[in-house]
Length: 260
Ligand code: KIV
Ligand code: NA
Image 1 (tube, rainbow, N blue to C red):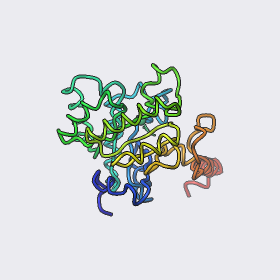
Image 2: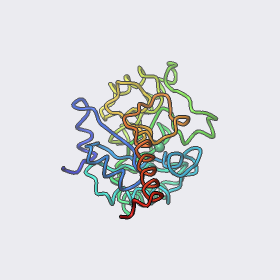
Image 3: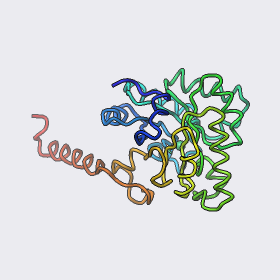
Image 4: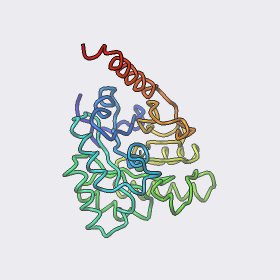
């Protein structure tokens, strides 16, 4: 399989829906890649999905680099993108550049996803000028959870919809290769997708985006049902398979059938 690049991702817009899943470790990345996904995202969902945090705010640059390096060691053909953690994009440009440099150079990612709209477009423009492939993230920005007080849907009201369209425009002008749209009204996501020259990847943003992303543990059946967001569809029951395997091992040990 030829290596997926930001260029090949851009070319998929209008041709073929783009498939994105998260992974935080090498085996998951290997299976996702063998299944032919286009992008593997080392999301800061790492925090709540595997590190036991309540949200993504506690996730550090060290955490992201540690897990991105593990994913990259699986040598996937898919593009590996990693999240810039909480608050990082709002430091001085030198600091932001250094953080992105670590994610690409040290951890080996092929792109950096950054939460933020028009307010961070000037920084994004300087990053893309420096050769950092940036994936914008608009709509619900989960890193804002403490300031917002909750996760809420965006883009139903006309003013919010216009603001999101302006965010998308500013980020595209700043050179992002794609836009992630999270938890927005589906008509708003449709309008952004139609207006944007770069692909949109949606999560809980309806069917009109150029691609879809889900958290691996959610779609595989590894997330306890009380934590599973309502929009998620479960495509496998891996949790039950894990449990079956562990139980069979336990039974074999206790009945002295293993080792033979
Ligand atoms: O952190 C993450 O996993 C994400 C997506 C699911 C949008 O940012
Ligand atoms: Na994220």
